[in-house]
Image (cartoon, rainbow, N blue to C red):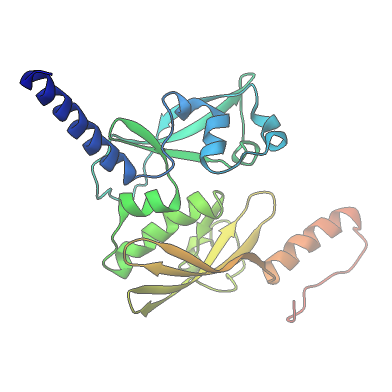
Length: 243
């Protein structure tokens, strides 16, 4: 083997190692073409049950540029995208797309699913509470409820809900991060407030201490009254303070 050939091999090996190291910093890396393949997207998030993927068979993904207006990426990347699944000319809603909705970050010439770890890598670390709150809002949209909005003040829901929220998002400084009582409001299908307990680290990692669950409050009682008055108009119904 000549010296020139040996040098070329060493350069090729070094280049491959550098590329492997760069890609290793991202998880859920998709194979070429996988960014528009609903089966590949679901499998990349760990959903491998064939029967559960029946609803996305025959669909095709389209990449649409996406951004989080209040967040600034802190690592080099080639764009953020949302995958919209189309089937027979109809856009599938997020809850019909398997484990979707799917968001991708393109980096190192490859597409990577925007998992919680990749989200933290893209937008972390977090230095202040003011920087953490929009990060938390984006995280909630991606990984908790795509239809819900973060409730920090009463004005966050006043336009769509006359009643005062039962609680507001609370943030407590803690060593190495923040403890958060997360309050979300959603008007999708059923108007309701939701609560979760989270631990947010300064590197962007988020641990769920208490899963997202619906809050029983007066607003949900009023929704129930409106429905009952339609089916039983002669009934007299009222919310009580204990609801």
